Length: 459
Image 1 (cartoon, rainbow, N blue to C red):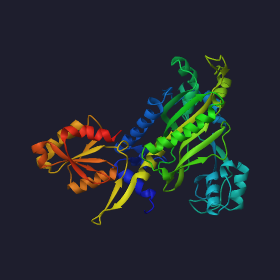
Image 2 (tube, rainbow, N blue to C red; image 1 turned 30 degrees about the vertical axis):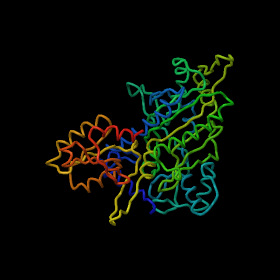
Image 3 (spheres, one colour; image 1 turned 135 degrees about the vertical axis):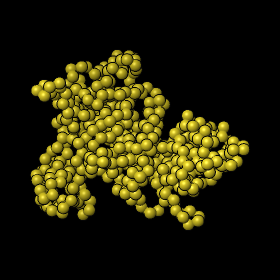
Image 4 (cartoon, rainbow, N blue to C red; image 1 turned 60 degrees about the vertical axis):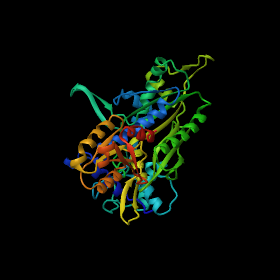
């Protein structure tokens, strides 16, 4: 199979209504994207399935929707204000800004130099850039400023007058909301350790480097599950959520051969263990999930900074302890990009023609059914009645423009799994032709049986 070019996915997303450049009519805003009519449907499908598996069908897990704006002390306790930074340098020639560690790592990989730029100090990065005369990828000159730390959090201001304003931050992750509400949920839900807190929400990072389409953006949505447990059981749950992550991603329809685990060589200061699940994108392997054993670091820090005791009292042993946390986190936009890349194919048919098709699983597809009247004049009314009936069960679309063959191709390209064609026989016996996207086989079915037939495929 020919290697997929990311530009083909970008073009598909824009022309078919999945993803548009943000603020495009004003020239755009770097690393921002708008999810169109098809993109938002897939986004909701992913979030709904994650919620089903991690909350609805998971014993002792609870949902949360914490605020985007939090007390700035939260970010002091978490360490984000002090250390949530990127090493940046500017090209003096063309004025572009670059992450030094990325330039160093790319150079090292290209020249087979075995280093880990993520673990290098500013001085080591600066020395490497100078020694190897790394050039600006934009203009080709080696003329950089010194490397400096740049905080990734967006600042905003809270206050009613200009002279009375306090800095607050757009959250760079959703995890801290679960930690500051740990006591509230434990008490109000009368739950016992171990238990989980999960939420889906927006996070913001002031990324300055382009990110391979939607892979790295300044605004993104996270699905995060924090599992609170007793020390000693943490590694058992860490292994469990590593496997659960792989099972969840595979359940979306992503091929297992395009997924891999990657253990962290360098652990964050709070982590006992950490592992990513990576997907093989057209531009290379990229993280779409992370599982982290965060120990009891977060709750201890919030206890220190807030003065509120975070102890859990075991009702059986009367033992007090601060729970360990195993985190399972997913980027919604990255999962959408992985789904689109994984399901896209250009097929050569028996007659020698080709078709572009998204082999999305039916539960992930934006539209489950397309209703197509064979002849616009004769069949539109009947087709519209069927469309309105099916819309009560699942998302559908209606298409009466062009030949039936062209309409099939349009639906194949956006991943609609089933096409229902209303023809002359439909007017006589209330049966329709339903066409399968992947096999292109067609069967005859009664209108009344359509909802159950499709719903059975969405389980």
